Image 1: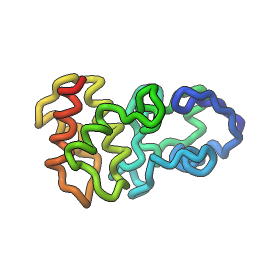
Image 2: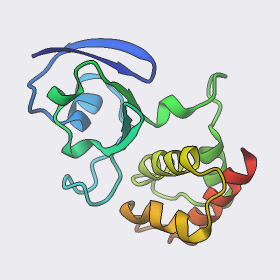
Image 3: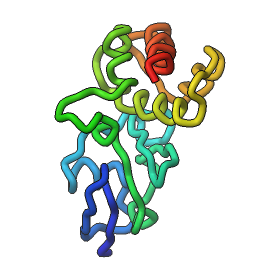
Length: 154
């Protein structure tokens, strides 16, 4: 199937099996490797991206449903200056909220979506928003702190 999508602001046209997962097309066909496969079942959040502004787990989205859509990955959240981290990314780094990096892009995408909807979330709201993101390295305290820092930096 020939389809058109916009990825991180850049229009792309590609031929893909409509049943192929968005995650695989991003990683294998487009070379965008920030979205990670953690579980392949939509349970861990490592592959989270925005599809037309809505947070989705890309391992469960068939690419055939993305024709004409806009996809934003963690690369699309960086500021306009080259190599400049976005506020959530900077806060995760400053708070020590990352280790191995498998979960980090999904956490960044989820936190970004939360802060876009709620500029000043409570700790309970942060916990609820990040409940679908599994991290086995850092624990969650530093991650929650990072989201609070990012909210304060906005």
